[in-house]
Image 1: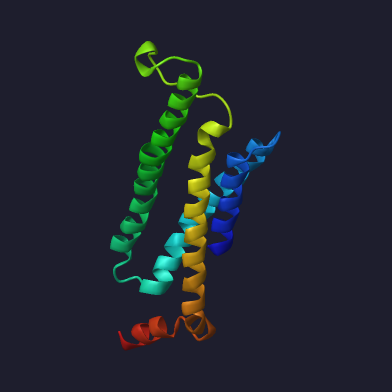
Image 2 (image 1 turned 30 degrees about the vertical axis):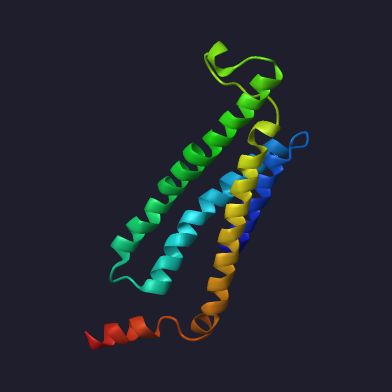
Amino acid sequence: MTLVLLLSCVGHLLIAFPTPGSVYVASVIIRFSFGAQLPLLFAIISELFGLKYYSTLFNCGQLASPLGSYILNVKVTGMLYDREALKELAKSGRDRSSVKELICLGSQCYRLAFSILAAVTFFGAVVSLILVVRTREFYKGDIYKKFRDEAEDS
């Protein structure tokens, strides 16, 4: 999970600070990362918490994606885009009442937003790395012993 999140962080930085052709590479990286995150998340949930309450925890894990998307896309990215568009509008000598829609052109429109997304994914990678360190002893042992013991008892 840590590697997937770090890879996603690289993809966001490629969009925040673009070079010719980097957006294509970044879109492949981010799609791969997002596609790998959810299956890994559910495997981690089942291994750490077991299967007794898996359906409830699965739904909590499912909630993370739309909730994070709403907060980061609508609240953060939308607000930052509008701010950059207003800056461009002010540079052209017009005010908000003179235009119907806010339009921003250039890489600076989303630079801060994708930098924030990269920081969030980097934070997730650090948290994932902490989880790896804390569960290292668990994974060194027989992780399925508990399940075999439960099956033998019933």
